[in-house]
Length: 383
Picture 1 (cartoon, rainbow, N blue to C red):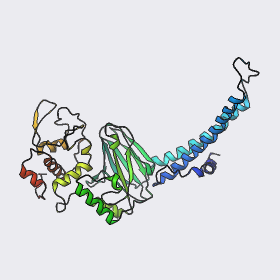
Picture 2 (spheres, helix red, strand yellow):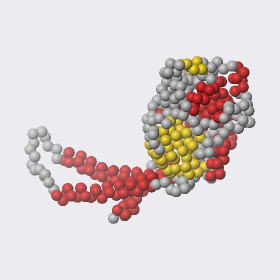
Picture 3 (cartoon, rainbow, N blue to C red):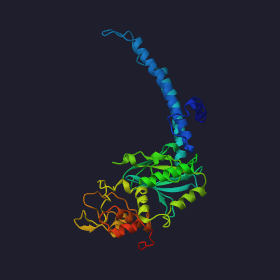
Picture 4 (cartoon, rainbow, N blue to C red):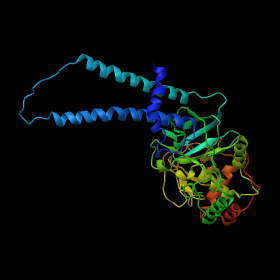
């Protein structure tokens, strides 16, 4: 009998299958989840309306003035009680069966799925594509099952992609996983539209504005990815984008493009600024002197900083490098030790570029060093 319930319920939920207020269905889970939502909504309405209507009718029909005596009282009706207990139980069992089947599908990862590592932190995301490639955007291949292996650097976060109907909590101190299969590839904007956005961004000196342009720096339309677990002051800013490529070759080309800086195309300081925006540095460190959960980069380089231990340290290349790789080694006074280590996530060139970017923000940087930061250089820090 239970095996017949999906077919029976589908007849009730056809008109609820697509809700105008729902996001686009862009994964194999989306259609199933929306249909199940429709089934449950229909059943709730089907029971609630007659019961509430009957209750309202009885309250009006049998209302007696104050002081009136009850003419009769029914305390027990075996058949009626059996009916309203047993009949709804079949409906509840059917709802449980449909929900359990959908849940098991969500938790059973297909063999050979494409894997991406995810690190959540206050307040940003880092996707690990292997081969030393990290990026805040999540890039996938259409119709390719994808598994996300997720961890948190600090507090509980929750990854949610509305168009995929996919959500999972990320708890510090343990790994969690989720999977999905995208079904709709991201479209590309025209070259003219992309060039217009790039020109405006370059001339304004601002970071890439996803909300303004509604496509990535590579010209792809995207799906939204949010943190849905309140995680502190800038929780609302903890969002990124999901891009679904047509082919694996297209994804590989994107990974190659973002894997490392090309010294012939981008100088160290501008690339450092790009890393500052991409890797979540801006969530804790301002560039205008505003105090956040971490020290501001404004005029930081070349100053003497007091530590929680009472000691003092010069903010130079070695201190910045150590603070990136081992942030709890020397904690600045007045700031909590919340920064995660980026060891293994940033190359030596990445760290070098970040240092050069920080130098450009400080009035204490020697003029020749500041000028050198904006020029291409073959000098790299020792491995």
